[in-house]
Amino acid sequence: MSQNVFQKLSLIQQEMKAPKNLKNSFGGYMYRNAEGILEALKPFESKYNVMVILSDEIVNIGERYYIKATAQLFDCETGEKLKAEAYAREASDKKGMDDSQITGTASSYARKYALNGLFLLDDTKDADTDEYQSQTRTEKASQSQIKTIESICKKHHVDVDVLYSYNNIDKAKLTATQAGQLLASLKRKYGDE
Image 1 (cartoon, rainbow, N blue to C red):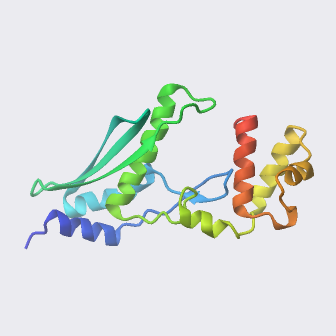
Image 2: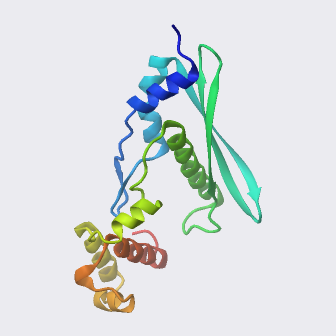
Image 3: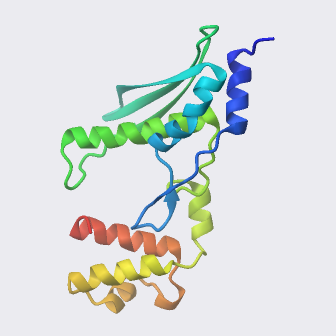
């Protein structure tokens, strides 16, 4: 008995593993990208005779432009399809990027979340989720985060103790969230490190 597109998607959702194999050096967290998800999907395309097509559309909502990404799962046997959509806003300005790179970044982000939605991939520990923020609010900063803060401060002649004091942070109780915020602030001020 042949399976319909819903049954095939259900099997893929149960079987597919797309590990978070990339590390954000500033935030100290692991993440996955759209390319990693697509790589994890490849064996299932032939196994279940399906294919995924990604597309983008620029949409205007209010006064801002968004990239609307659509991830469609096509059943090659029946022609049935299912889709998931996600939106990402283009940043007004991103230091060191031209307009096409800003759009590309928004596209990659939206595609990742469209794929996450279609395949039920869990991103609860990604830096942009409430769950991650809640978890890291009390989690101690990693040594990597601390060393990166100190390295940037040293390079730009910033007194690290003054930095902590100015931000009302007890250095001995530095959390992962606080470290991530400090690193983001330093990155904005001094550019890519």
